[in-house]
Image (cartoon, rainbow, N blue to C red; front, side):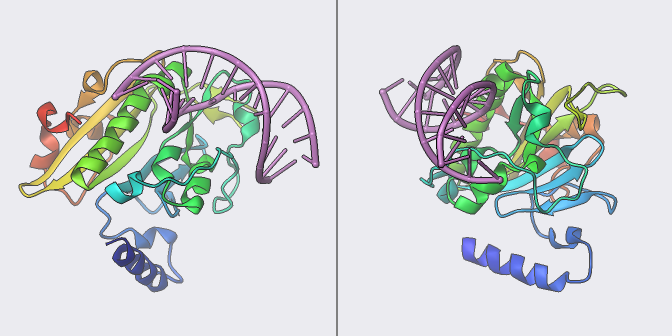
Length: 248
DNA sequence: CGGCCCTAATTT
DNA sequence: AAATTAGGGCCG
C-alpha cells in the first residue's frame, strides 16, 4: 500500500512539472481545501501550508498508518529552517528564551518510520509557538490517542493547525512569529460504514485535560477556521462524532 | 520504568 | 550546523 502511494506521488509530481507545487495533492483524504495563494509544501511525512505573515503553518496534514506507528527509528530533534520554503521564515532564534515551546504540528514521534521524515518534521514549516503545559499535556494526549487510533484502525487521516482569535496576535522573536490563541486537530478514519471523524479545539494556554474534554465536531472547527477540512468526505461524516468510537 | 513533550549549555 | 550532554514533568 505504501509503495503504491509513493508511486502515485511520483506520477503526480511528474505530471505537475511546470505548474504549482499545489497541483499534486489530489486524492489525499487528509488535505483540506486551499487556494492558489497558499504556499503548499510537501514533505515525506506531511504536507503543509506555510503562512509567510504568521511564520507558522496554516495547516499541516498527514496520513498515519499502523506500520508507521510501529517504526523504531530514533533521532534527536534538530530544528532547522525548511530549505523548500522561501523567506521570510521562522528560525530557532525566534523561539529561544521566548517562553514558548517549539510545538510540532505533525509530531516527531509520528515519523519514526523514516529518517528523512523525522528530519523534515523538525523544519519550522511544521512548528508553532505552544504553551509548555498544553504541549506536554492536552496536546500530547491527543497525539498519543491519534497514534493508538492509527494502530487500531490501520490508518488515520490527520489535519491540524493554529487558530487566531485576535486581529493582532502576539508575536515572538526578531522575525515576529505569531502566537496562536488555539489549535485545532481533526481525525478521519475509513470504516466499512464509511468515514467517521472527530476533532479537537485546545486553547494555547495551561491545558492539561483529557482528549475527550476538547472533542468537537469537524463541522464546528470548519466554522471557526473558515476552511473545509476533509473536502472529499460527505457532509454527514463531519456533522457528528461519537466518543464511543474513539476510546483507544 | 520507558516514552514523549520539551529546555538549555556545551562541544565539535 | 550538528551532535552531545544534562535536566524537568507527565502518562501508561
